[in-house]
Each structure stands twice: as structure tokens, then as C-alpha cells.
Length: 408
Image (cartoon, rainbow, N blue to C red):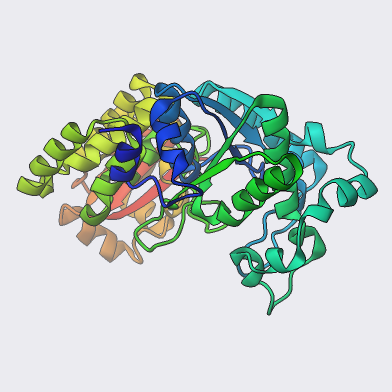
């Protein structure tokens, strides 16, 4: 299987700018770039598939450049339905620092910032040296612009594609970069860069776009959609990633294994067979979680996430840290722990039960757990030594209702 055939098999190619690119991909030796704007200080899983392609191409002898859009991030790539909120220079600088560190740690390739070659261009040079190569009718025909014509698009947003084209031209002239790779929503910007290089330099450049990674509802992963799974483990823990991937629908899982891992076609096909034979074992989901978490955070983080999941599932809460419980149960009802109070009064005061009668029935009916241990003693008194690390207490009512108590 050639590189191009493998990328197609994995579902990683939606379109290429020229059939000539196929042989160039298979033969190696291209310098290419892939970029992201600093709208946050961490990349998310939506970036992961796109940026993984830098590793895939590097393994076949291509040279990757990772571009962080310090300039384009100040303007904002037009959204299909509304204007993107502008962020401050200070926010952009903070986000650039975080993304640069992350890109080097995870992907290990050269990182550039387009602010470095854009900041000194004045408006007259911008219009004369770049703007004159763009026909307004050509720009209006681009999908992102076209989708905004009825609701309106600002001149700043309209100019975004010129800025991105300028990036491609700069990298072509200064780095020998002949290929831009991106998600499919960047096709219009990529082809604008190809056209600028052709018109200004009379040279040929290439573009390749991938399908966007979407969740089960068809929404792309990202900050805008509110479903971002961050690559920074301090923003999305390894456990949260593990829980997300382990609960993925069967309909999504094989395509994710193809797009988001380096498992070979043979390995994925074997996993698929095992998964179809015993879907309840979630073999494919576990394989996906292992590959992604290990690649992002290391084998130790993956093993820790598995142990945490097993402890939580089995009710072995005492083996979990207070910080872990506070983070993972941040969205459940919280209450303040009152020490030396019996279990019935505790349940009522914490609003876990509506009355002492209900509290007694719950305890007697084996429906209350404290830190993963069933509690049936109506005289049980909550002591400080019951708290995990002297900080928190996890109470479960029934099968699914959790309540987290913290000491005042």
C-alpha cells in the first residue's frame, strides 16, 4: 500500500489540488505546512487528526512545518454563520506560548509564527503586493464567504484568505514549502495560496484537505461547538479522555481507529473482527483510548487512567485521590460536610434525601454508599477519618446519583 493509498484507506484525504500530488506524496521529499490559529492555549482532539498527518508524512520522508497564526488569529477565520469574536493581543500572545510548547512536545517538529513576517507589512504594501492578485469575484465564490453574504461579512474577515495565502507564499519562498495540509473547511484558503504563488512567482504549489473529525452528532470537535477534548491534560485529564473514548458508539469507532492511530490496517482489521464478535467488551474503544492517550500523555498516564476507571466502576473509591474525585465529579451536586453527624441527618442536610423517613428507607434498603462502600447502619456517624485525604466524601444514592461533600 502506497502512502497515498493508506491515507485514502484511513479516510484522511477529502480532496487534493492536482493529481500530480499523488506521486509526490508517495516519493517523499516535500516540505509542507499545517497551521492553527491561537484561539486557545491548547489544541483539542479536532486538531489531533490533522496534526497527526504531519507525523505520517514525516515517516515517509516529508518535512513538516507547524504554523501558529499569531497574525491570522488576531483577525479570525470567518465562521459560516457569524463573526468570530476578536481576542486581545495579550490573549493571543498567551495562547501562542501554550500552543508552541504543546506542538513541540507532542509533534516535535519545527514551529513558525506568521506574525513574524506579517507585523511589518503596511496597508499600502499589503494592497499593492498581495491584494492586487485577488479578484473580488473569485473571493466571493469561496464557500466561507458565500455563506456569509446574506448575513454580512466584515472587511477584516473577508481579507483573511489573503493573509493565509500570504503565509503559503512566504513559506514557499523562504522554506521551500510546496504543500499545505488542512481540514476540509480550509479548502478555499488553500487554493487562494496556490493561486497567489502561481500568479506572483509562476510556480506550482499543492493543497490537500482532510475530512473534519466529528462527534456522534456530526459536529466537529472544537472550542466553538463547546465539545472540545483538549490535548492539555490539565484541561482534559487522561481519565476524561479514556471515559470519552471508551463510551463511543460502535458506529464511530473503526473510522476513529483509522484516522486517529498509527495501528496498521491489519491490526485495525483484527480489532474490528474481535469487536464485532464481542461488542460488549468494547475492544475497539479500549484500543483507541490506549493509542491516543499513550501518544499524547505517555504510557504511565494511560495506565493511571485505566486504574482510575476500574476503581470508580468497581466502587473502590478509597484508592482514588481527593483531587481526582473533585475534578471528575465537578458537575454533580455538592454539599458541605458536617462532622459528627449521623448518616440520616447528613443525607437530609445535604439534600440527598428529602426527609429523614426517606433517608432511613434508603439506608435500610441498601441504596446508600459512602466512598464506594454500602452503608446500612442508621446510627453511622460521619467522622473526619471517613474523608478521603481529610477533604472529600463521595455519597452515591441508588445506582447513578452521586453527591460530593467537601469539608468547610
